[in-house]
Image 1 (spheres, one colour):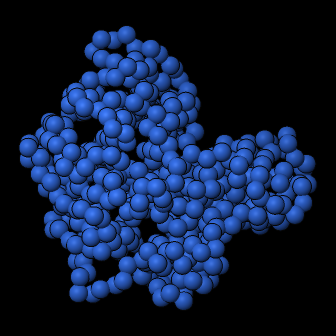
Image 2 (cartoon, rainbow over the protein chains, first blue to last red):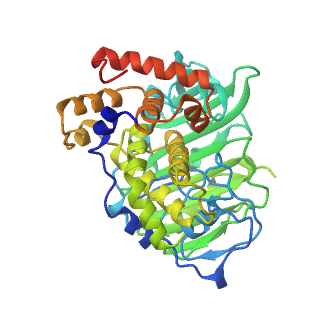
Image 3 (cartoon, rainbow over the protein chains, first blue to last red):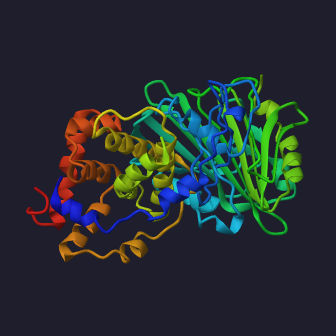
Length: 305
Length: 158
């Protein structure tokens, strides 16, 4: 080890009470309520909380379990999970304790300006005049060598004015008009990102994020992700946690299930099928309002079975 | 892992984990989040470690994986790097200069520099940890050195 580098980083310290915080948040082991093998991680929001993590999930079981904390479940699986499969858990905490984090618009600006995969090489920037793109007016293309996906061509599209339809390559255009019926799209807070393999133009992954303002204050964020390397199955199962004020599995009008969690004015909802996932995080909606929105999202079209 | 074992390992390694996470993410808040996640995974680990160096290498690998998730994650913490850097107290001014210079590198160079100079990893070990070809690691380290030498003396960056 180089002494100069050791000295340069010496003033950086983790919070002294971090181990105690970890112990305080770790679950009490209760053999009587423990899991069986091959569990699931619950689906969670993409918002980061004070005890943070998450944005990636996986499901591989067919039973519903009940735990005091989602961390109990996720950590039990951690050692069984291949390194590149991410598990995320968010401990609920009051909204005012959530540290400041990027807004949807800031995230979009960061992605458009610098990309999302670390070091990307800028290729082109265009303003689209293709009427089929319906509001997705600015496009930036970059290429990179991603550690996980390999060589990638990444296309970033934003909707300068609100776009009523998201032009997904698979399964097809997604109608978003229902979201704008009672929420206001935040300026510069819509983005659609596609990663493709240059050798065959094959679709590697998709991420989309939309930000909305609520009529009486608060915000609503919706994310969509698609990754052919992931398989959530056709009959997903979810984990309910008593750590939240409300925790239920909701079946939409078009017969798709979503895990819906509420805590201190915040609501998280996630539906995952096959290679796709929709996640919602809102501060200002009730659980019932989020379930109404889920009914309007036409998840059956997004997740054909 | 029992609490005593966990506390001993956590206290011994959490600064190292935090420094690696910070060098990757350039955000104190994100680095703290990652450190907490890594420590939680340490606590929940059931398999015993093999050998004295195993915990350190395991923690580094887990930290790098957690940082990778953050790079892809939306809505990271907003934070001005200078705000945190200005709170740090260095024993010698040149330590602070080196810190600023390293943190001024692109993320892909910072990680390699940190693992090579701070952790003392070989190029092959870095390649294995980052799942990159060894030649790529060598190239990144070489370019990082060039950039650092423009700012710092050769005594600091051999």
